[in-house]
Length: 106
Image 1 (cartoon, rainbow, N blue to C red):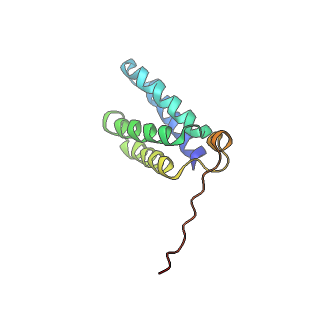
Image 2 (cartoon, one colour):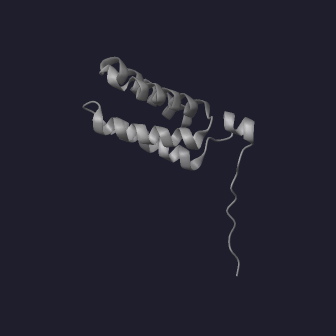
Image 3 (cartoon, helix red, strand yellow):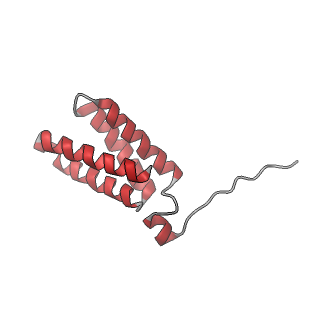
């Protein structure tokens, strides 16, 4: 999910920057960097939150198809909450965090 979401977000932003006005270049570069960080699994909670925020901003301000941006924003938010997974730079640098849910006994 991280690979597909990051790659799709980078491609979406690149095509929006290619066809859109040059006023949003700084936001576009930030969006591409956030997508690349999400793709690599580096700083995933921060990158996922940025992808979610920028995806919603793109949905309301750019293009005739806001549903694709909303979908990518949802993927970014989900990855920010779930985490990068075992095969990511975050797991290599900081260790893979695993949450075990135990049943409560009375």
